[in-house]
Image: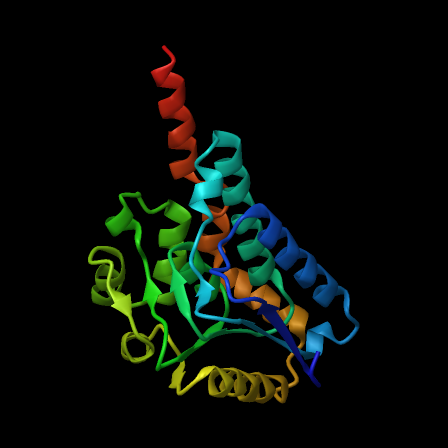
Length: 235
């Protein structure tokens, strides 16, 4: 905690792949934050050490069994729901690559600020042969208003720099270096806190704005299809 700001950092130099252990740790941190007496008059910044903000799902871990894939999907959807319901403004300070589910994690925040000299936003599904889930798409529609920008990100699997993101309306601002990016997120967070909004009202309005996303988070049909395909293969 730094003044009126909570800074949540994915530590270490790894890829910050999203598996149940990391997702559980993040959810636990948000739960502690939410219970803090100052929560409704604060803001959250999420950032990461190293080359990656998050390189997406830990597919090597998850694809070894169907229950693991289901658990990972459920855990990420729960984390996104927690962020949407958090009673304060949220900012992702993206200082490295944010790929696939890692990009979804960034977009689950109210604002994204990004380092311009390293890293990109990258929806890798076309390149690695995966179908995008409905809840990913619902979140993309809520955060990227221009259909051409969505096509570029989703159907061309473009690796978007910070300045691409600013141009497309995905990223709030671009900055030189990790330190400057986190400092910009802190400046934005302080500006939002000075408005003295009631955090619970803020979260209530966010839930209304992102209603379609919350509804889509109830299931992940791409995981269900894996289970269905396996069932058919046994017949």
